[in-house]
Image (cartoon, rainbow, N blue to C red; front, side, top):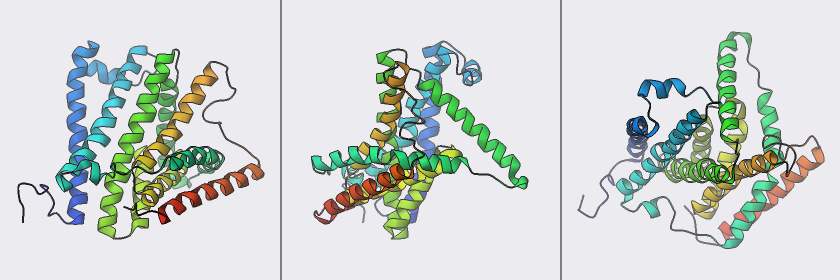
Length: 311
């Protein structure tokens, strides 16, 4: 029975919770985008039509400001806000619902730092595998569309990663590393993985499905495999430690690495670029990457088995 102190939607079935969350995500994103569009008119001194028409010109500085503005809005409207609202409506305690009240030992964060660097050769190898994907002739139209979407996403990423000043570098850390790490982990691990587990009653299926949605959401099909594997890793890190701060930290380290490497490369402090950082053709390095990654994951699992912190 509902009482004034009970969560508003505590009586929903697991599937109803999942369906409601999907509608909540769509609603929050739509409302945030429309509100942001209205605010953008006086903010940038442009009409809605001019704003929409200018979004494909990545060489224009004002266009990049608009795109960055909407990128930040997306992090709040599509990821952070729905997860926070769902936590309140389902449990009336968002911090506990998203497992933000649990903080593992500092040693876990040290393992995470080593883990994200150890996975770099493997992740780059998966990228090269994914790029070898080819479609049969009757699906040529789909392949062309996917390549076009991938190229557009690549151009936007490269435009964002041009950092002429240190302030631009700090802003990118916020926009590309901090907000996506928090927002995407709130949504895909904190909310969807939990709801999928309640519905499917199987944590492994929940992790795989949420990782699939996480990778598909980016609409970068030639990077689907490495993102899918990262999503699985983030999901298990959440399961093993019981703290959402762990996949948030891992996600941040992954994104921040690309920003730092790009910034240092643009200043000729290091050679190469973020796309090739950690890439290798050596099977010895790949084998070492796999073994070190497996060992570090083993240490995280030992942490889970030695504590009561579980989802």
